[in-house]
Length: 345
Image (cartoon, rainbow, N blue to C red; front, side):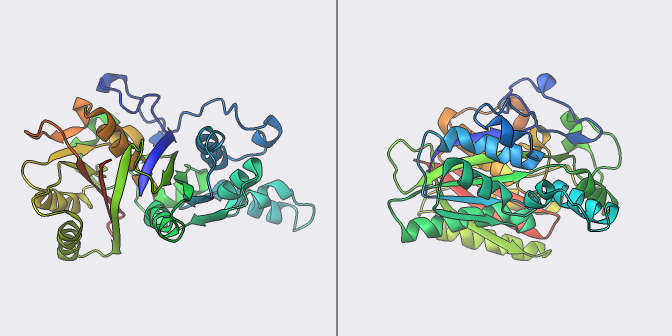
């Protein structure tokens, strides 16, 4: 499966910012997305949209308004969670009487993909995968299966999640986030549980054509486990199956997020990737959230295209002059693991 176009909305105005002193810091422990003006969304529709819907539609329209796609495949852990809570609160407040339909309509999981289909009059395959930390990976797998069945088609694939007040409070009580105020510039130096939460939307146009492609998604694998040995075994099998003889991983794109509870998994994967494999971390730029791996794939595309890395993202350098195989590993809450192998076209 080949990636031809990408677009993202994130907490940074420049995700490839080379000067770490210029990156945006968390506000109230949150790395909030910087939203564009959304010029392609009709104003009458825009004012009714919740944040996740704005970001998802706003990141997708620049791609699909110029390129026809045969289907829309998204991943989101929470989708319209904020609107869902608003609607539930209205049910209590008005005793199930005169309720506002807007919040209900925008509270369903498939609202972003649905809005995109309506705005662009796209009547093709339209689905949203909601699998927490594997939502985006399942969307990618779905796209690969669709392309296996419909070789000439093109699809929009993406991942979207927001920081809703309700979800943030629940996750804070569950211990998912840092309890202390911490600079994202010092994130990897912390030795405490929790991460810095982020949000964003990332979109890709994919098809089976290698002509003009930015990158190729060679393989995807995922598992649910808290067993470190099992994760290592799965990765070894994954690399053995998908790398040709003599091929190696040139760049390991790590989803390390400053949480000392998941650090052993990332260290285990680093050891398997090889001593001369460059290691890059990105979540001090984006924050962590269920579909942050979509931003990891966006970074992989940029690194393959530009063959350069911002210095502050490097954890370990390599002697290799260039890289063509990138392994993306993401760990969500210590139990959901994904491996994505991306290569140059």
